[in-house]
Amino acid sequence: MMWRLLKPFKESLRARLEKLYGDQQLDRLLERLSLIAGRYNYLEKSCSTETPCWDEKSCLLITYGDMITADGEAPLATLHQFLNDHLAGIISGVHVLPFFPYSSDDGFSIIDYRKVDPHLGSWDDISLLGDNFHLVVDLVLNHVSSRSHWFRDYIGGIAPARNYFIEMEQDADLSMVVRPRTSQLLTPVNTACGERFVWTTFSDDQIDLNYANPDVLLEMVDILLGYISHGAAIIRLDAIAYLWKEINTSCINLPQTHEIVKLLRDIMNNVTPGIVLLTETNLPHKENISYFGDSDEAHLVYQFSLPPLILHTIHSGSTRHLRKWANKLTPPPEGCSFINFTASHDGIGVRPLEGLLGEEEIEQLVAAIRDCGGFVNSRKGEDGREVPYELNITYFDAMKDPANPDDLNRQSLRFLCSQTIMLSLRGIPAIYFHSLTASRNNHQGVAETGENRTINRGRWQDEELRSLLENPESITARIFSSYTDLLTKRAQHIAFHPDSPQKIIETVDSIFVVLRTPQDGKPVTCLHNITGHKQQVQLTDLGSALSGCQTARDLIGEKEVAETVELEPYQCCWLSPP
Image (cartoon, rainbow, N blue to C red; front, top):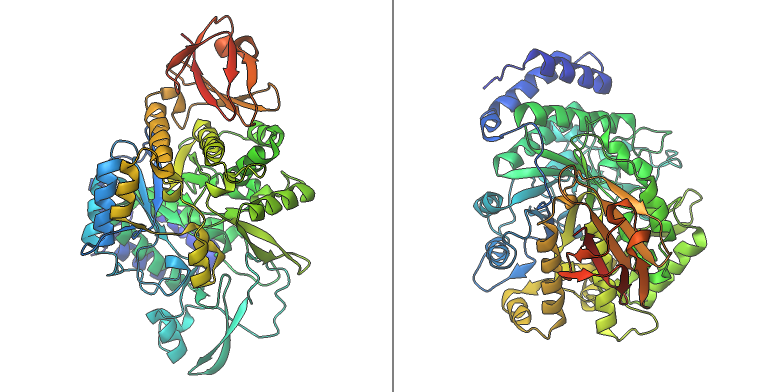
């Protein structure tokens, strides 16, 4: 069915398409987009508002579809039941990492975008999750599996996919291209037309798509709207920064890439208003937040500098770099927000530390992670040398104290301090499943797969996990209980609304203090002792929110604190005026 594009929407699409592809194909492309939009125009009625809705209760869980398995059950159904039993009312949304048929990279090398992996469940299972939680779905639009039907058709010279990929001469000068990996950028393949060299940013199984061909973009628009029709509330654009390729450029963050994000945002605003766009760009902070655009690109952007900065803060015992970074943060544009996190299915990015830590400090952090049992993945730097790209470790084991590596109680305190810092900052928290369960490094998995990232990608048996949670002495139960208690208390205070302003309060170097001031309601002053020693601070030194107060209420400890606040090692307090 042809859908009549309203004039402002049509003119916006026309302008964006012309920037990308010139004026030769405009009418054809607009007609195709109108047909695609018409297929999903019923979604407009089910989307309630053009303004994204989030509040202090907003919290995302990041998980694989088969994070929890049980005999005789579809993993997606097992996951759903666990979430209903243990996290209902605590998390508001769930990011189910790619749940499609795939060939590598634990889901991010997709064979078929339009199918659910039958080993996980069905589209019905996905839609049911979307009925209970805000569902985050990945649009893995930079590359596709070498086993996909698109790539098979390319090899066979079959239209339209024969033009879906990027061919280069073997000796092409690609020295300016910014690389996230050490693998070869061009991969040889035998096709019906002879040997060809195709662009592969991430691996030889993940073949980059050619967005200079508008038919590729139109395919992705159809796939995106299809995900929304199955219940997606947030669309995550995976590896978006590398999307557009142009010789003699860095091939990262190119203007055409931003234009495509804007075009997708326009389509969502008009066809599926209220659906949220999230970009994944594991880059230095300035490049990362560029994907907000002028409030016309992503609604949500990850704080990629936060995980390694918190890691450095705990290991160094100094808040200096964290304070400096947080002080310079500018509020996101209206209608936009940050996603704050410490861990995900990937490693902890090192590039986001560029310009924040010195080279020696980064080397010390890398060494500390290795001492904690972690690994390091590298990329090719501008000079061709291998440099650290990400730290591979569970965030719980990253919090080992090098002086007391076997002290689980101390490790737990350090870990909970790191998570409380993240929860205190302006934005929406996103929590990786393994952080809730205090998962340990999966060295056995790494030995089996040969992939460093497997260290943080373990899976749980449903019976085993439930048994551990029922044992109050287990580290899993202790962290899960403490973490969910923090989330429950956070959700009860409007100061933690993602739009509530924040201010960093300068005190001693050993305490990180952030003030959250809601438009309506009491402010909260968040204190974090990031050292293994007791610390003291006066209420009068904590800024205007507590000036003149003889006491304050600690929302975490649920008790009154005196004018002199005494903090145990790694203790955190959320202080509200009486």
